[in-house]
Length: 152
Image 1 (tube, rainbow, N blue to C red):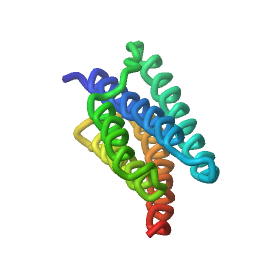
Image 2: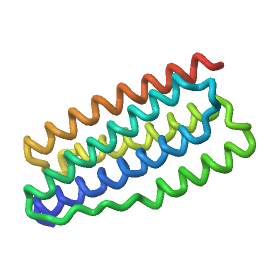
Image 3: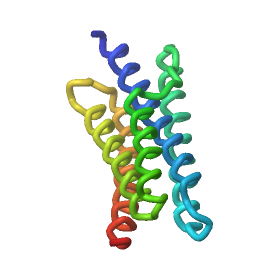
Image 4: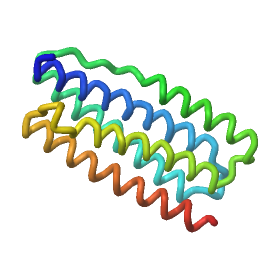
């Protein structure tokens, strides 16, 4: 596969998982109780972070004269369905919601690790964008994990 085509595929895959993340955090906000205002603020912030990632990735694809795919992955739909099922059994508790959000963050971390593989032969500019986004995602994951651990 040509390097440019491969780069476009990688970027579109990251758009999908960021769209999954947007939907996942929107769903998590919906599951929170009224006294979970701290999580609501955090989840809305992380949802916005992924929206900004999607915009930046889409801009990069447009600069390559290619089409942006704005869908969501099938794995993301499965993750949101799992959140629904788990919520029915956990009663929407903070720890359960945080654990599921951490699982989602694990998935996006893996997606960025895979995207940054040397096999993808991304340009230095695209690598710089992905590394910056990856740093934010790792920080978000660690924050959610710390919050989950504190709920034990």
